[in-house]
Length: 451
Image 1 (cartoon, rainbow, N blue to C red):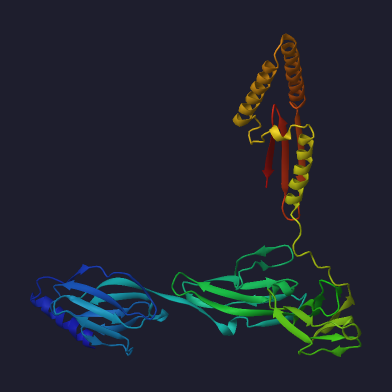
Image 2 (cartoon, rainbow, N blue to C red):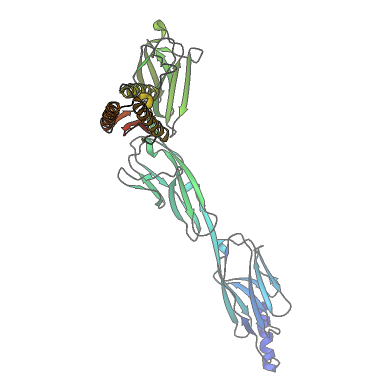
């Protein structure tokens, strides 16, 4: 009724010629995209409004929200403000998906003037628990389907992953790290498929949400024994081992002989440790101070759960104690060098000139040895001269020539090379020993050690 009266009044003013210029919109209404739960403002700027009025209307719902500075709707989240000049602002607080749509700013001229703005409300994803799968427990070999339902604006996409970051076995031949889709089908599940699966929903609006679905696969206990026959000497301690796979977790214990259950104590030490996967358990039984009448014989590792039971047999027998190793074993290299030195020394001294030979590292005759030989030659020549007479001199020259000839022959015999190579490989270390005996006018020993 108020709008009708305003229109009639304005028509009368027009007839009287009192209006010189009609209102006009100065700026368009800006389109807005906002996340749900936030506050938003839409502004309408009008010039030459005069006595006309501005109204905000929810165009999609055909509902008048405000007129001038009055709120018409009963929605408590709607408000309007005016800056006193030409801007009229519509306020929506804590917007939700129902607030999205087209909004119209209208001036009540004879032919109403309007402009429009669009409000987009985006909603983060939310997983609907009532429409999604919960934790699942099945027997090994069964088929299962996991579902996940999520809402949001835009419509969320669904991705599946395993919480342990392993691949998802869709069937026996097809594996993926991620699977996209609202439903995840697993064929002929095994214990390796037992894990927590994550349903992840995202639509580009933070935050990303997920749901955790635990898949449990039941199967009877299975056992593996690394050593079924174990030997140990008297008075020693020994540890027996077995590995069990079972779900639900199995009741485990050790027995010996005719089924006597063993308990933790001074004689027996029993430990259990969870393996790399939740359904695997490692068991150990340590037997201290073995005795012939009491401890040797059969032992059993036993496991039971609601799906069945199993046991593994380990036989413990007596062995001889290990032979102790020598505390200070002789050095192999020391013995090697000692034997070689003995042999080479005897072979050189056997020539009768071991006291005149100098062994140096370069295999050549030393300077001191050369001086000694020259001195000996001079001394022998002086002795021959003192004998006097032509006969004595001739005999001396003959002796000197024979001596030099004999010395040259001996040096020529010693001029060849004696090479002895020893290859030795003591435990834990490879040793090669190369010994070279060089004799050219003197004797020299070469030792090359490759360690």
